[in-house]
Image 1 (spheres, rainbow, N blue to C red):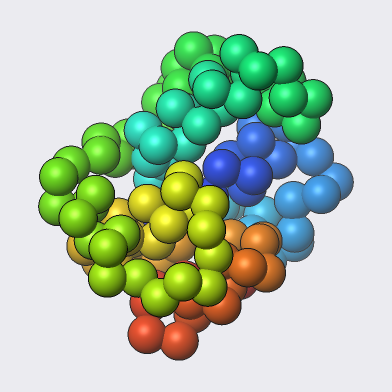
Image 2: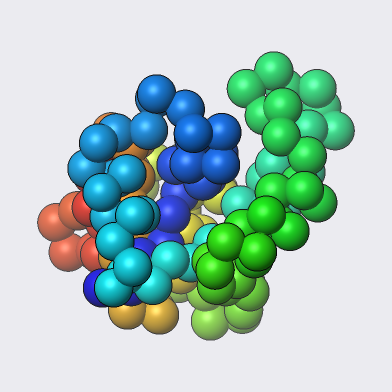
Length: 130
């Protein structure tokens, strides 16, 4: 399977955090799965890092480098992804999460999330709550 990880799952996976759900850990550890991260997640971390948000202690440059070194595939943000946001239901207003959902739909990836608000898109969109 091909999975796009939401930002929190990326952070928890890199930190080897106990907050990473077991189901997510199993999917991430399965070598038969292709794991993607979005440039939007790197952007989100860079923005929140510059605003001194305590939940985003990870340096965006380091995060990107470590993800690439660990075999994650980087998904750039395209105009097609951006326009896909317009058609999403209004379940969630976070612009980064909405872009991840649009990217997953456009690229035929499963978005892995542990965000209940994002999981509201699981009907009709490739979102998997773990």
